[in-house]
Each structure stands twice: as structure tokens, then as C-alpha cells.
Image 1 (cartoon, helix red, strand yellow):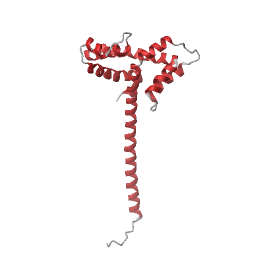
Image 2 (cartoon, rainbow, N blue to C red):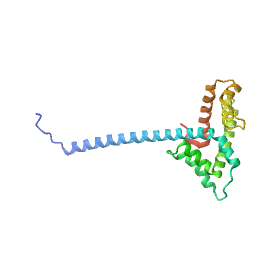
Image 3 (cartoon, rainbow, N blue to C red):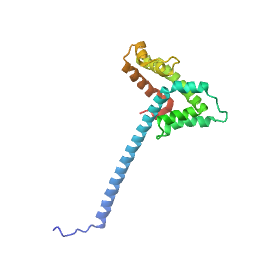
Length: 190
């Protein structure tokens, strides 16, 4: 066949080409869809871990706010529960926006503090029952650094638990990963 000659495609060949192209396109679209869903799931998990750390770091501020706030009686529990949902689902909310949103509503803050307190207790119980010295230490380090009424520096905590200062933050990170599952549920799991 010379370069100028054109080949005529039969209807059967054209149908086969269309089938192959459609399958390839559908397969590519499914792969892209799966990749996007996995990426979204990872982002949601990362956001929840970030929000767990944010809640824990600001725990004392929130607690102080609740202890000194004048509650608005017209606020409903549904409004307050919106704060937790916002932490779980809203991807465009910044850390500062979350902190300010929580502090704007005394009832909302009280519900979040109650939830954190309950899950901290569950986490501490789980660590005690594990009989793992490392898990028990992690729960104590987290508690002493951010929850207890006594404020400790990372140096003091390192000294109390005979660990390096870097280990203080490693313990806090590990504890926050486990606590994230308790605070936000199954979506925080890999």
C-alpha cells in the first residue's frame, strides 16, 4: 500500500475500535475516581488529626472560657453540635477560624470540652488496660502537657518521665493519632 492510499474501515472494525476506546476511557475514569476518593479520605484523616491537635493545644483556653462565660439560653444543642461537625467535614476552615468559632459560643465550647474530657478518660483507660508502659506514658505526657491544671514545659515533662524533649512531642503525636479516632470516629482510621 502506498502512502497516498487510504484504507476504508469496515463497520465491524469501527465498532471494535469504539468498544476498545470506550473501555479504555471507562477504565481510566474509574482509576482516576478511585485515586481521588483515596486522596479525599487521606485529606479528611489528616484534617481530623490536625483538628485533634488543635483542640488539645487550646484545651486550657477553651476550659477557661467555659468556666468564665455567660451562657446564652437560646442556644440549642444542635447549634453546638455543629461545631463538631464543622471540625469533621469542612475542608476550607483554617485553624484560627475553628478556634474563634468554638470560642464564640459558650454552649458549643462546653459540648466540645465535655466530649474531649470523655474521650481523654476513655483514652487513659485504654492505655492503662493495655499494660504498655509506652502507651501509659504517652497518655500521661499528653495530659500533663495540655490538659492538667498544672502547666508544665516540655523540659519539665521530659524530666518527669525521664525522656528526651523530642520524645515529648513524639509521644504527643502518637497519643493524638489514637485520640483522633475517639474524638472523630471511624473516619480517622487509615
